[in-house]
Image 1: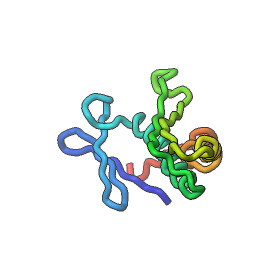
Image 2 (image 1 turned 45 degrees about the vertical axis):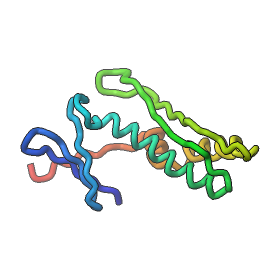
Image 3 (image 1 turned 180 degrees about the vertical axis):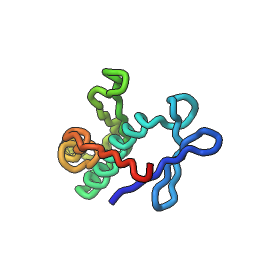
Length: 134
């Protein structure tokens, strides 16, 4: 099971924590240096894909010289995102003629089937609200 907790601090900021002790300060309004919740959603998409794609290409003997992922989206309504676009910046190993094909095949398969975040967004994972103790 995955679980995080987000709390408002006394100074009006928001801190997200996980059970392993990691902490992320959130920006409630998208201002300042901290990630907004929407940006964290995009981090989750790009992060899930790259941390799955990279080891699978490396296991096949095709480690990319440079690999970065980015995710973009725009609001299509005041409180709704449109499609997310996942992009990679890749530098292929100079002496590996098969690296491009292997990377392309793995990245496509990961996004379609193996990245939990992408798949959950695509299939519309429900969000259940529990208001216990109020």
